[in-house]
Length: 104
Image 1 (tube, rainbow, N blue to C red):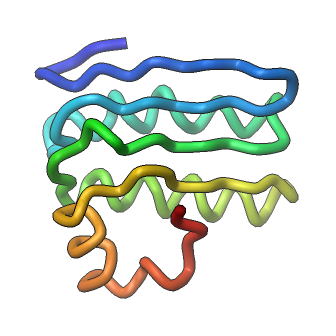
Image 2: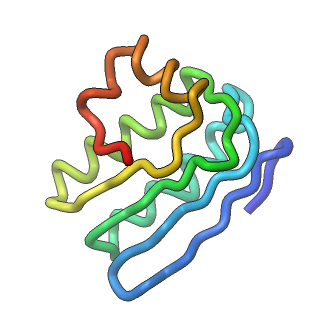
């Protein structure tokens, strides 16, 4: 899946899925991220979001992650954020959400 220099790949392993995001997540392409992530909570027990190739993330991207977090809690799933860059971690921290998420 690709939109405005944002690509998203999925790797399915049993009932676990890893969503690998590549590119800056901006307000204008956050819907691409959302459309890839949200359906994953239907059939998977654990969702990994790999942000190794995400240099920056706007509030639109944070909103998608928080929606995923809410879905994981309401559906009894787990969600882990992987490989967060310093810039994205800074955004998560100043937004006050870093301590609510599982980030490794």
